[in-house]
Structure formats: C-alpha cells, structure tokens
Length: 270
Image 1 (spheres, rainbow, N blue to C red):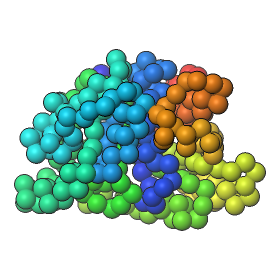
Image 2: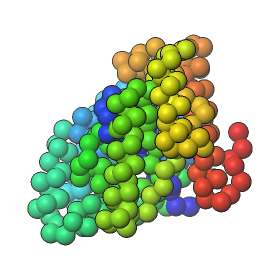
Image 3: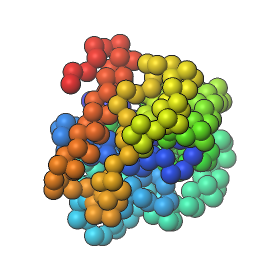
C-alpha cells in the first residue's frame, strides 16, 4: 500500500479549505476504516486546533517545523485514533521559507523537501491530506510536489472562482517548471446558500470552465453545525451532527470515485 496524497487548496482564504481537509480525513478514518495522515502546513494551525479539540488532545509536544529541521517527520506524527494520524503545525512554521533557502541552494530541492520527508511514511497510510495556506508560497510548492491529486475548493462567489482558476494556472506552472506529477481530483463547491441564485450561477460557470465531470455533484452546503464544530470540536450528539457527517461522507465517496475513474479502475461503490 502506498498512500494517495491529496492537497486541498484555493488561493482565496476563508473558503472552507481547512474544514474540508479535516472532515475528509475524519470520515475516511472514522467511517470508512482507512488509514489516514493529515498534514497541517499552515502556520495558523487551524486544522491542528480542530483535530485536537475534537479528540481531547491537550498537548502538542512538537510540530512539523521540528520535523523539517531534523529531516525526519516520523517522530512528529501524532496518533489521533487507531486510523487517523496528524502532523501538527505551529506558528514557528512561518520560518519555513528562511529555513529552505538556508538549507538548499537549488530551487528543486527547496520545493521537493516535503516529498522527500514523506517517502518513508507513505506505505503506512491509504490517504494523506495536506492543508496549506491560501498563497503561492513555499508551503504550496512543497505540497504540490508531494501530492498525487489536488482537490480544489470553490466557494460559490466570483473571487473564489478566480482563485480556483489561478490555482489551475499555478498547477500547470509547477508541472512545466518542476515536472510535478499531480492531477485534479475535482472542484468542490462549498458553503452554498439554499436557493442562492448567485451561488448556483457561479457553480454553472465553474462547470463551463472546468468541465461538468470535474465539478462535484455533492456540495458542502452552508450548515450552522459546521461553524459550531469550530468551537465544540466534531461531535455526534444529534441529527444535525448526523446530517453534517453524512454530507462529508457523500463528498468523500464522490472524490474516491473520481480518483478511481482517473486511475482507470471501476468507479468506487457507495
């Protein structure tokens, strides 16, 4: 087994990127019995905070930056439960660009460092998700070079659509400049308002730009429970929780179908 590595991205902030990375990892590990590693590459560490809050983790002894400095991520991996592991981030990771420029002279070595560090870990997991800041940066470069797929998050508004277009252009740049081998797993619309005309018009434009088959049929709808989880952590208390979990399970199932189809296999079963 070698993990399929997926970076979750858009170059507009606040589109639900981190929530999707966390919930995809959560549902795959909790409900689908897959071994998953979630890598938080954002110095703001929002994915780390949500996972810790949801799992009762009160102390994070080290973070991804220490692993980068040591040249070994294995000691940084935290077990969340039997199927889910986390490589946490911290504010210290803001020093990544300075570290990379000091350690490596060649551009290719700078952008490929995460990929090198992940190689020893890939056989332990079915899926690896990478959450990155919404910027063209050393964080995104390293994530792109380490990933097999990118899941592009599209909030249903014009600026997010432009961010998604920029992301595709950036992906092509990485392929041309560094021979990155990465494919688009799909474009996932998030935070749609029920019946919102602008929202649905944006999704239709996305289908024109990226192709019907590349835009997810399952949307991450605007649910108050998802915002509540930022405060309470992920819970299983009532039917509102169940509805939110089912939404992400449907999204993950469709993502796996798209990946299976891309790799030439039969579509994944429900």
